[in-house]
Image 1 (cartoon, chains in turn cyan, brown):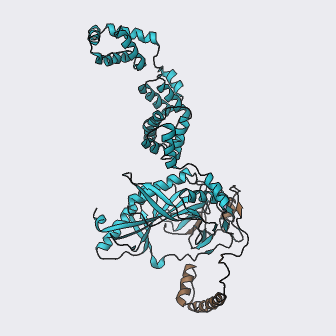
Image 2 (cartoon, chains in turn purple, cyan):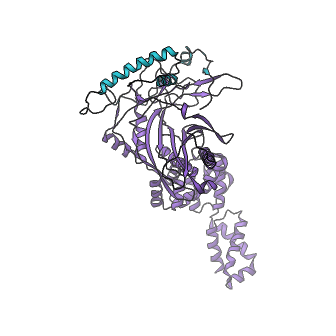
Image 3 (cartoon, helix red, strand yellow):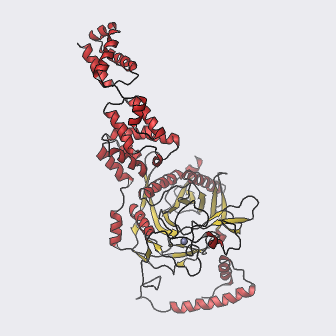
Amino acid sequence: MATQEEFEPVIGLEVHAQLSTNSKIFCGCKASYGEPPNSLTCPVCLGLPGALPVLNKQAVEFAMRMVLAVGGTIQKRSAFARKNYFYPDLPKGYQISQYDRPLGEGGEIRYRLQDGEERVCRLIRIHIEEDAGKSLHPEHGENFTRVDFNRCGTPLLEIVSGAEMQSPEEAYNYLISLKQILQYLDICSGDMEKGQLRCDANVSVRPVGQKEFSTRTEVKNMNSFKGVQRALRFEIDRQVKLLKSGEEVQQATLLWDEKRQAAQVMRSKEESHDYRYFPEPDLVNLVISDDWIERTRQCLPEMPVARATRFVNQYGIREYDAEVLTDSKSLADYFEEVMAHFDDGQVAANWIQTELLGFLRESGQDINECPFKPQQLADLLARVTSGELSGKIAKSVFADMARTGQDAAVIIRERGLTQISDESMLLAIVEKVLSANQKNVEQYRAGKTGLLNSFIGQVMKATDGQANPHLVSQLLKRKLEE
Amino acid sequence: MPLSKEQVKHVARLARLKLSLKETEEYTRELTTILNYIDQLKSVNTEEVPAWNQSATMENVFREDEIRLSLPREKVLGNAANRDDEYFHVPRVIGR
Ligand SMILES: [Zn+2]
């Protein structure tokens, strides 16, 4: 691409993650989505006069987990501040946030590019703040906006990266990795389409080789990971075009329009916000002891990379498979539950990746919506390794399990699918096949042992594929060598 | 430190206040007096005093993550100037 030859983009991301606490950050209202509008509010989150906020301890612990998981430093003493601005979805006229004393500083996010290369992006800060309400766009012809305050005061984690990423693809993979960490820590569901994860991007472009940053713009309103990638590509192209035609990039905030695949300038520098931050007088300082940090560190769950390494060692599966299986926490949990009832890791890994993931992809379901339990899959797999079911039949049983959620045993019984391992029964069929093929039998005995497969094929055909192929082969050899 | 009229106008705009010319002059004078008082405080030698952001001696006041009953919607919407059965109504805003 022409843009890459003379200019390089510099990207920094600001991510807001909704913390999955039960209640809001400063009051006891339920932190929940999809409830009737304005049914989850109280004097505190509505900012009524005299109401006092009290900090939710769980929100602090969730934030601490994140700071520790990315290798950041938890500040011994952090404080809350008011960020003042007027907007209809902000009833208090200010947002309680953290400013000069954030909870966490530093840390890094590791992510992989498409070609497998690993990159590291440093983080500047991680802090806690409250969310605003939601305004609904006016219907056609209406001259008012509807406001729902249910989301007001739900806890958010703001994660600010350094301006270190150099392409929209890097930003995309950074977000994928960030989401994976949040989900592993069990502190955010991470669905960007549902607004549980939101991302604003700072973008500038500079001539290759230039050390200083150029004027940057902020791009907002992306609601998917791919949307972030597209918005960044658009904005980088726009800036490069301006610079190439000798114009300057103006500092501004742009809104991404997914339908039009374009970003529009929302406000320029002159009208940009002046938030007049000051210390929140209604909240005392947050002091975190070494002991508290240590306890939180010890409760951190195993993170994806460590878990993949353990999978390789403990279950003897291939490294690549371990990476696929640990991609999401729920998939890794599923695999481990299968392994609690089954002993061949690689077989389980293969089935989960091809059959299970294939089925989920086709049906558009999530692993959490899988119609059968890990133990049921383990039971099916045990029937394959024991020789009771051939691989082919097992796959058809799997398809029925996926459709109905029934146990393999029930499906096998109802469809009469049990593999025939009864020696006397198979022997009769073997003898029949051999006597019908006298010529081939003579050739085999004369040394053309490759014919064995054709005998096996005929026995399998005569049993509708239900014969145990291993046993068939043994019986044939025994008869032929008599 | 004298405050300029422009600065007063800026702060007024941020607070969504419309000031008349006379008011602007009045506030410029009043706010300047306040800032002068702050300057006076600044002249105290605080070298030996650690910087601090609040006077409260308490720290770490928490609540457990427990759900409490919210207000009934009819009460919440009760004092709104403009509303329907579910929502507050405000002058039309463009999405941000
Ligand atoms: Zn509330």
